[in-house]
Amino acid sequence: MQNFEFYAPARIVFGRDTQKQIGPLLAPRAKKVLLHYGGGSIKKSGLYDAVTASLRDAGVAFAELGGVRPNPRLSLVHEGIALCKREGVDLILAVGGGSVIDSAKAIAMGVYYPGDVWEVYEEGKPVEEALPVATMLTIPAAGSESSGDTVITNEAKQMKLGYGSPALRPVLSIVNPELFFTLPESQLGYGVADMMSHVFERYFTNTTHTDLTDGLCEVTLKTLMKNALLAKADPKNYDAWAELGFAGTVAHNGLVGMGREQDWACHGMEHELSAIYDVAHGAGLAVLTPGWMRYVYKDNIPMFVQFAVNVMGVRGSYRDPEALVLEGIDRLSDFFKKMGLPQTLADLGIGGEQLELMAKKATWVAYGGEECPLGGFKKLRWQDVLNIYRSVR
Ligand code: NZQ
Ligand code: ZN
Image 1 (tube, rainbow, N blue to C red):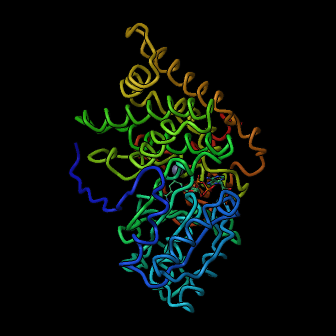
Image 2 (cartoon, helix red, strand yellow; image 1 turned 180 degrees about the vertical axis):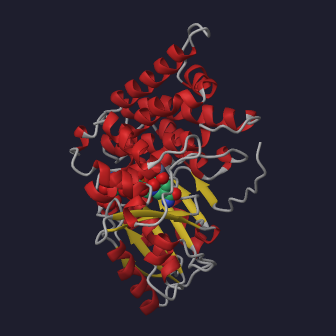
Image 3 (cartoon, rainbow, N blue to C red; image 1 turned 120 degrees about the vertical axis):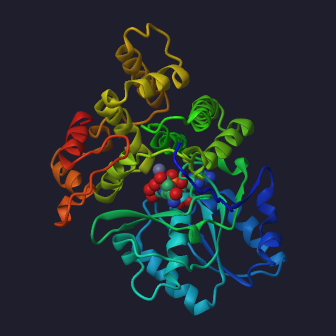
């Protein structure tokens, strides 16, 4: 096990009707908030009315900025920064999914950052100060409600980059699984693929003596698969959504990755798909993850046998470990298929034209400078990334 520090201070208020507490919970810490949201689902579901009523009743003033799109855009972040400065906002309340929350975090940094906040993403400039962000989660997926990370798309440059800082961990997140009932089936699938990927990126490691976190990863993955099928069969199954909501937070608040070298190659490869083709993050991950597994498993067959047996329930002869591994990966692909997720780049409408460019962007070769291979489990150079893209065409 590696040395680590774990500090995940986001306060999670979880359960039925918790959205009604938002006003009283924010009143002691904010006089004026920016209510940030997406393309309108919260208005359709009535959540917007519930939140604004709670804020008003608690005497919390608010400005608002809607219109966040999946793969949140830098241009709206710039608008939000100007709005917060103009209105004297002292906290941002993101009501939505990962895109809204990530946009809120970018605005929160940008209010204090002296230059263009994009520099933080592109150059990794350290950020210590940001407005506090609170969230009300409407889709279990990105885990941004408890992570210190934000991922933003610079539409002019066709770049999608992430940035992380402890200053960006939400101070409060309301997670009411009832708010997930209105999700379209496609978003359930994308969310589950993303939450599973957050565990995979930590689970597949060459670090040894990681019994506790191996077990936490495995139970999180099994919880996600079991309850995804239940929520798919019955979109109003509160208990299934509650398991998914809790697992989504656990998958990405850092705990299951403590003391282990982490990977993150699939996320790096996926961001290039979203940057150019604007595909849903979870859809891209569902295509890439089995391809990545088939490309790297030979580097650590015991780790993949453990996955096949403990997570995917494969039984067979340990004398043929490779057969166990390949059966485990096939079962994962089958699960994604059952969830209605895409299997190939073609399913996502992505042809072969830009594969080489994306592989070079993912490893920074496209920008001149030194190559930055992707991944901790196996270092992937741009040709490896290209091979993986081609393997899932
Ligand atoms: O915009 P609205 O109208 O609200 O519709 C949204 C959106 O179209 C809809 N939706 C959300 N909740 C709903 C709902 N529709 C009906 N009922 C509800 N209750 O779902 C669509 C997708 O929303 P989005 O916020 O994009 O989904 P998600 O949470 O999957 O977030 C994806 C983004 O998070 C980033 C991804 O890269 C991607 O940009 N990530 C952020 C991370 C982080 N900050 O820690 C980690 C992740 O790895 C991920 O990369
Ligand atoms: Zn993700």
